[in-house]
Structure formats: structure tokens, C-alpha cells
Image (cartoon, rainbow, N blue to C red):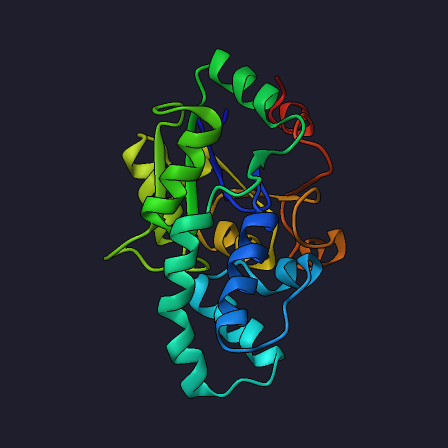
Length: 217
């Protein structure tokens, strides 16, 4: 029986593509570069903002020096725009309510910075709705390192076998599997079903309420 559900944030709980794309395009414009599309953003994100900047700027022909200068600019713009058009995916609120009724512990583990991860979650769901929100922070390596989900499990009093890990990218599939957790690839997010299936997660889900069936509730 699962005691805990650990969720990725971007592309799993929340549709944040508008905020991410707007932030990146403001940053690119500062350096006179062409904007990215939302479809490009979905491919460029998933393993921290630095890699997002590297991929987006690299795709526009920028060199290492420009990329290095762009990272703090991106952080500044993201602080101002991280809530832009952010909302939960259809079915997420109902899923979470049903899980809370069953006293399943809820955690978020994200490569988004700690302050922005907490701000996103509190903006959409309210303060204290999740038992733990873990963003990028000192001392815990970014996903796909499994340290974050394992820290969440320990904090919430669950073993890895008692946790279901849910995410929408190859980074998440590698993370959940490395943590020894039953891993769900969610196909409503940023990446394709084929990308997720290639990593052989325990489950694939096409709608949030599919999680209830997976958990047998």
C-alpha cells in the first residue's frame, strides 16, 4: 500500500509552460536573440534553469560567455514572472483531494528553485496543502539524482517501496527508478508518451485520475 505520492512540479502538477517561455523570451531579448516557442520550452526544461538557459541560448547560436551572462538575468526575470498563467492541470485538484481523503502524504520534488517552487504551489493550492515542497536547494543534488525523493520519503516516514513517484520527463523517469520507487510517467505534461515509455516506468498515466486506479482507490 502506498503511503506517499511524490510529484514533479512543472508539467506534472502545474502547467507552467507560459511562465517559463515568457521568462526565457525576456532573457533572450536582453541579448538581442530570437524567442523560443512553447513547444521548444517543453523540450528544453526538466533539469534545472541553468540547463534551460544553455539549451535555449545554444539553440540561438549564443556562446559560453553570453550563456554565463544570461543565467542571472533569467533568475531576475523568473522571480518577476514565475506565476504567469500558472494553473493546475485538469483533474489534479480532484486527484489530490481524493488522496488527502485517504490520508496519503503528498510531496513535491522539483528542480525549480526552492522559493519559486513553494510560491507556485502556494499560489495554486494554498499554503500547507502539501506535506513537503522540495525545490532546488543547497545539499540536495538536482534530479535525476534520487536524493530529493529519498529525502522526501524519509521526512514523511515512508520507505521507497511505499512511495509512488510521478513525473513527465525522462529526468523524472530516471529519478524515480533510481530512488527505488514505483514510477509513473504522466503523459499530460511536457514530453511524449514514447519518451517516457523508453525508460520503462512501472506505470503510464494519461489523466490525473488514472492515479487512483493505479493505487487501487
